[in-house]
Length: 422
Image (cartoon, rainbow, N blue to C red):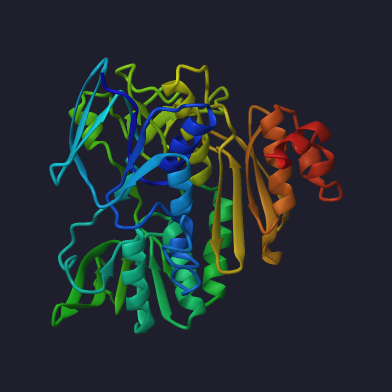
């Protein structure tokens, strides 16, 4: 009879899921399997502190080796699972090496991989992606000797790397195919602010940029050519145009897949047996309001942690539903953006503060109800909005616009206390 849990994906969600199983009293074997040579580590600092030489994969690890030993979690690195066979009683996951892992319960925390751009010249030395510690170490090495850096993609990762490279004295150009920066995540007001802020700091930003190919000499990248015919010099090119959920194992199992592994609010997959959590999972909107998006895939530390806790409970047959208000952050040099909630489908925006001061918040409303906020260098606004969303309070837009009243005074004290205590 098979026993125990196999978790495929040694990442934030995978580590949290294993830890939560133990916290909930599970005493059966737990095996956490990952492809990378490193113990599981934090990914967000890779585009910031790591590239500055202020962190390493070892310093970013979630847990010590003693933790895994003490909690009887078998951590397996350098193993890529290529096939899974399972039925209602369990199954076997087989690695590329031939190693087999038997299980009674299965969790997929397979994460995501960078979206590739198949342009001519993509194979040139200096053309980079950033997802893993190995990617970050190579990019750090390349940036150290670079003069001209080009970032393809004006999303959070691209802008974080661009800000760091510019602060290090590099000539930096950001190429964004859309008409504004981070357009899928923030309002036009926030996009316009970041465009102006990066330009003030000396970064060249080209919107509506259509890259056609990468140019090179002696197998090294030397420039990026645009559809306009312009060529932008480049010693290093970072491609940051989003990620794609890793669903190959889920598809092999016959699980429902649609921009990620489809799960319910309890992190349960379509087979009613397997759970999935983190960047790979497509889940019901945890803060759905009328007019909002029904389902989505969240790429954040907070989602990985909270959804993994729910997945662990589900594996043990305990009732659990993911209903936490999503939140995100992005550090771009001295600009700290904190996002609470999901702004999709908003019909009103309230601006608190002056973007020219680089301290302001954009509050999003739908049908008169606060649904999200972008807070730039205003951490107290962020905390207050999270508390308001968490408690389901009503915050009239006219009161939110009044800068003379701190948002924390408009949030129920009990809600703030609960949130700060988390």
